[in-house]
Length: 423
Image (cartoon, rainbow, N blue to C red):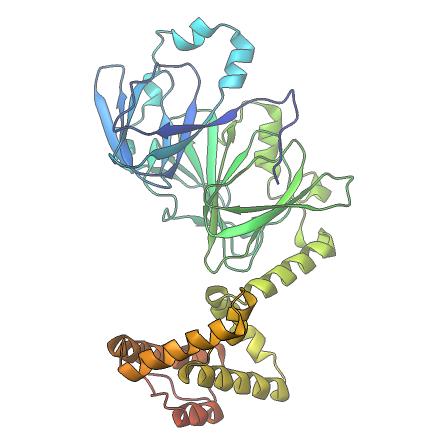
């Protein structure tokens, strides 16, 4: 499922560079701004200043690069075996539409010394410009890794959220990165058509709709995906992964230089309710269906081990006494099946093995056990399984004295330093 921008609104564009060789020929200077997000790979870039100085830096997956306006630069792939993939967002459509002269854009000798920034901006350093939540800025030309970059709290856009706004090469191109904690989602909002949203960490989905529509459409995302909301399209991002989810948004019109009135209105109203003239739908005003969709999807994702370990404690705590005992019984029965080598006959039959073939496989497994093959592996697996089982049942609140007694009867050893059973 994709969203395309409506014609007539082109301020910027996104393209993909595939650096397949060890080096890439020097790029012709150009009179449009360029912000690059490294989708995959590692390498380096050299930028030449107006004075002839060459400033180089090494990048990797999830680096952010800002090319100074009209600078000469060259990308190098750090691997001789695999390609590097760089996503580039530029304001070329706007520049060409305004000047309508390619020679002016690609053969212009004008230099812009102020766009190159301080030397430390190419070493991953920068200048923090504090203002207020949602408007804190980091000025630089290069961010080594967006996955680990320190963010600042911005709960007004969503529970527990954080972000940072970037000022890149003192330009009009904007970028910001936001993070959603596990099991949370951003408040619905809308803006102009020029934002490109890249998933950086985690997995999730976005719902989108126009104001007059009742139908909610969905776009699933993970690292490598990009979502470009259309003009005035409401959209809302949801994290369903067992880790905080980060996304990068790149657009024309920065917080420092909004350039157009609509972008200034976006920056002023991005965390202000639509009821008060802003561009955000508050939680209490959202369609109840949105929260129900989120609840059901999170419940489904909780079946997976990583997410379940984060979401199950609250669910176990809410169980009645009868439901808790049923959950404890299930945990003990599943453990017994694993420890006694329960044979997955139904699984083999489901993928097409006939009865005789399944019996042959089962007999082969018995013979392997009798011969003692993989004994060392089985011993280590048993040790690690005992420790993980005990600790995880304690974490989610199911390690009662009753469960501990049944597990010990099955031969599960209490790991060193394990928390005591609950009463």
